[in-house]
Image: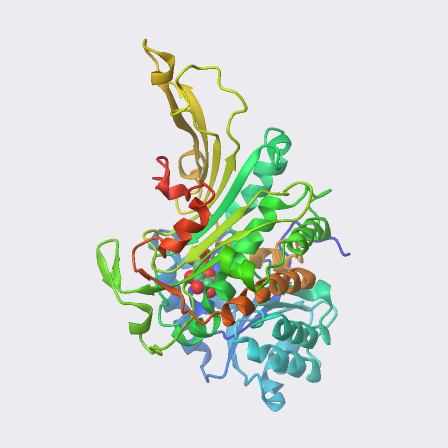
Length: 500
Ligand code: BG6
């Protein structure tokens, strides 16, 4: 395995879908920040590729406009923009037509010295023709890399077909499957929290942990993406990738080091230890929901069936809650509750590690007030870590009346005042320097699909539609029942639930 550079290395970044939403909203702003921080080594080039016929000036203006919208004014400066604009170019390519790659080849050949990074920010149906046509035109070299955006297929079979078509021309080492959650600062901090502190690891197992909750809640709806979203649903859009990646980082064994295979090997072991669910287990351990109209933060929100372009009969889930079990020594009998949904009351991603109750209480009459410790890792917003601990309130009086649970609170914003880099910024930098540690390996994606496919199959044999929930609530009441039947509670229902 080639070692990766810790320094920026010059590259030629070719963004297919270069005028698309993801490119304009996320990728180009992330590249702009890399420019600003001098992490795009000279003479790197950025080439937008799309079917559209833009002149050089038109494309530069398009990118300028998107940076005005997506980069805060305080971070946008003219000098950086001028440097960045000099690297920008656009070429018109139809990904399905090999003859249209001629102008792309001409542009790339002018800078044949630069390693090529092909970013496929397109629907996955274009991945195979793009790879094929790049190869036919002699554009794939041993130094080239390809970055694949999710969704990586619709199920295990289609994901395998995509991976197969890419593997014909790019080795696994050249393939970067992106899950932007892995680029988030707080998600990386999870590794630091677990493996750079001696405190937690001895407790991080079935002897001390009662259960784990992973919540990724969004207030937004489908945001004009009905066509894509309705075909995917929350399970494919969020659980198969983002939530399972978070689960892997919480549950994996300590890797021997931070090199790409050490980390990814441990993640795959978690995914393959997830207990598969048959139809009855799916019905007992999962909840599907779909939002109805309601209000989010005081603003009226339409139901899923009233969204623009909606098919009113759709049974696609916009909410999932499930109880997963990991069959290994560390996690036997410890449930992992996962939950994600659109149009929930707040935007919030967090991991809660709920520790077991005390084995014995020495304070008389304190049973009602003493609560088990809880570690809350806030991924977004208000990033930080909070450890809920019992404490004595100062002052006289009976001990039991004085015991209270308070947070030991590390707020990233208060502690580290520097700007948080965006997930894409971190991940694009890693691609430029050839570090695939934070990208998904083929076997990881495959194992995640295998587990998810069984759940979706179980749902398909269920004649009931997803349960409705009003926009602005925490999903169907069945989600509460799922966790409360074991006398456990979703974190926001506990009295330290206010974490904003
Ligand atoms: C994307 C999903 O992968 O992640 C979207 O396709 C979702 O539906 C988004 O809104 C959430 O990402 P973030 O970074 O805003 O939590």
